[in-house]
Amino acid sequence: MSTPQELVARVRSESGLSQRALARRAGCTRSTIVRIESGEMDPTVTMLARITAAAGQRLTIASGRPRDNRTLAAVAADRPDTDGLDWTRLRGLVDWLITHDDLIRDAVRDPPVRTRDARVDNLLAAIAEKLTDDAGLPRPRWTDAVPALSTPWHAPGTPRMRAREAATAPQQFVRRNVLLGKSNLWRSA
Image 1 (cartoon, one colour):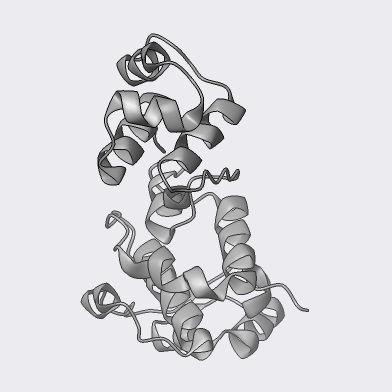
Image 2 (cartoon, helix red, strand yellow):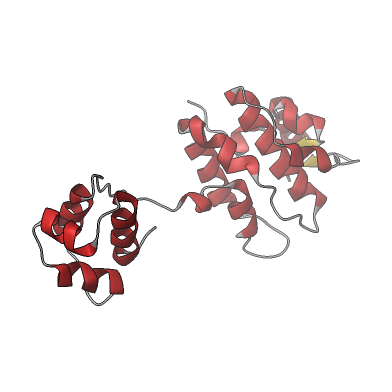
């Protein structure tokens, strides 16, 4: 995100206009442009729109969480303690990516920082593999560097519950010996 001073300086530079010429086109004084670019003045949105239009560009305003919060690496880094994951945030990310599949590649591109828990590392790799497989995208290379678990990881529960979880685990999870049912992270439609 740019500050108003960075935005005005950038659009002026890209347009090749002097401060005086930009001010004339925007219907303001040169001192207004100078004060905005120096950070002495915070312009209104209307003023920014006029200045960017005068420079031949359009001001677009968007809201929402920053994109870097919507990555597997960011969710993995935001662990409530050293041994766990924020399951609510992880499930929220998966839900969001299912509805924004054009952003999956960016969301799983960077490898999460490896944890001291091979189960967590495999879970994150399995999630990245399932998301990319479902979207018809190539898997991120970093998942190849995560060796599969040597023994199965089950969710806590009775033998019957564990069997049901294993039977509904996505194949990407099974391949890594992470026997968690799909419904743990993927909601049914």
